[in-house]
Length: 605
Image (cartoon, rainbow, N blue to C red; front, side):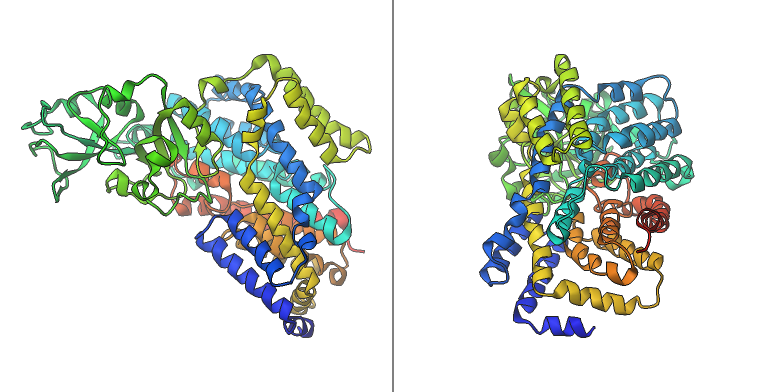
């Protein structure tokens, strides 16, 4: 504790603490994007003299960050070549007939794929396939989508390439001890963790996963078919004018629920069956995607977009070159917290929002006035070029596959061969992993697996900026003595504790912090502090760093704790506590198992 008090008296340490507190507040509040928070922190640490430019920016030239940068296009080439088509076919096969069998496939087959391919595109690619399987089997998606996310999270720690967090911890280890992680540094620990987690997913009581069914007991897919909320206007010459909803062709021909009628400044709520429609009425509908597209062709109504001055007429809705796609607002999207009208979405993206889906919630606001949230799914209509632009956006994730994105099957063996070679070379030779990844990046372009423009679009600039900037936290904590002081205070609090108990505390602390700020930020803040505990516990620093790594990666408690949890949250119509209920047992298992395995692997010196 004395060391911490002494460190805090240093003006540079006080500035560093101030920047850290500001960064944590910004990470939690989401006022600005996480990568901007990271860049702001780097700028402040340099401007105040805490770090020299070469110290603050060291993360942007680190081998770990360059490895991650090269991994994005290699993964994109695998997806474009159809390397996951066999997985899709396996899910759709007649052998997978029950949710438990599907979960077993996810846990034992899909999870290892996430060890070498980023889990976000894995989930995005398989999500429509799993939803189709649920529709065909009459099973609620909520029974299987959360296990899909958890499986990819478990697989993400099998190798160094499984997660950007793994590479960030490797980078911190390189800076602190000149000892970066190898490709399989923690695989001996992660394999038992993956197998134990897989067994949990398969054997966990089905009651832990909600079954979102309607009152009539039908499959939750029926709710899914009417889960979009949109807005239509009754034109002056519509045959619906003067008719009641009960006797109108609107409800006879289309599977829609009328949630509200807006008539001037008056808002009319159910029951609405006997209400006679008037010209200019705006109807808030809950409707299926299929029926929504049919509604566009119907001359009795006009689909109203987020811009009330531009209703969509049937002729406009069939313009050649227009595509209709679903997009998801991922965690950290800068669009969250603003309405479509405030964002000027149509002008900004050259895309029209037709409807919005928000998990199980019913949106009772006009489309242009709805404040967007992370996890919302928008149904867009836009020219193909505009959708291509959205694919490179960090604020929206396009869920539909475009025709030009269909697998280039001829290149599949080439892409798979390049990926395997990329993994084998640093394992059996002295070639550094970063060199192998960069050579693989060049190879996927040279062999035609990926075009140069696709390579550029595949790189997640937000992730690169965030990880590169967060390294400055670790450097600042070390340089100002705060890491030693905080470790000394923690060591004083843990005096008399066995090494196992201390590792449990570090794991739990990292896991809980990850639920409120990004896992990368948790690692940047805690890794240098935890590593300083190693001598007092009689452990290698590597043991503490890996504890932090697993604590930040094994996020099963909240939908916002990990990107893939949020991706399945809406389609599965989960509620916040559904994730906590299903993931609490898995988190407890990991809390007990991970420290034990780390002690087994590294022992006490």
